[in-house]
Length: 117
Ligand code: SF4
Image (tube, rainbow, N blue to C red; front, side, top):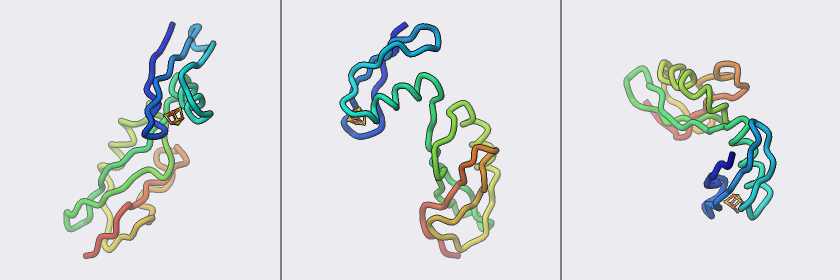
């Protein structure tokens, strides 16, 4: 089976072609740097995503957040439920951790903007 992907690691957006035999990767073509090859392998074996979202302050203000590192794509739905249920006290600052070890992924959820009361 052949999977065709667009590399999302950098803006160049190389077209990648991955040849698979079941779940085994036989070859990767189209990458122009090692990061692209690794992206193709990861995407076909254990796809990961960084999540950007918002949590709520107690006063109702939305607070922009993101996962500090990428999480397994298969856990996105459950992680979004956890993030959506989070309520924080103001003020918050860039880099503040609002959720530690999101659902055991080893990844924290951090604030991406300063928000005062
Ligand atoms: S293969 Fe390398 S150069 Fe091409 S999009 Fe991916 S990261 Fe960028």
